[in-house]
Image (tube, rainbow, N blue to C red; front, side):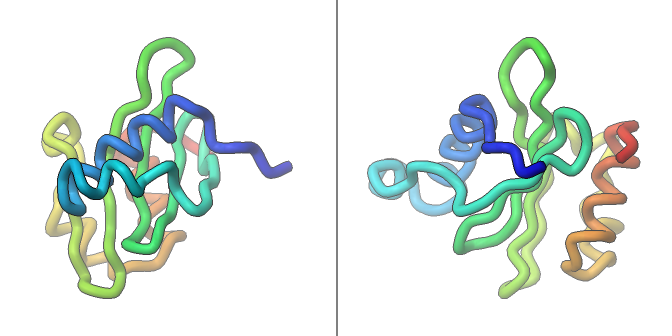
Length: 113
């Protein structure tokens, strides 16, 4: 069953996209991701024209940006909050495939599918 990306994840995505892709001017253009998939309970991978972003969306509280990958330029970003559990260089070494990234992010967050 395909689930709609929750508003909490959309709001977290917009904040990250504005920060990463140009500030206030981009904010007027960013409404939400192009697509999204819940890869485990409360863990989302969303996509836009720039790449894939991972978010943790707890049952209570706000969704939190975890990390992102931009396949076309081989760029990786990890949120400050998660840098102690996600090694940027290790995850970058996974290449850019979704399956490997999903597994690595879930393992780092202590989640399972």
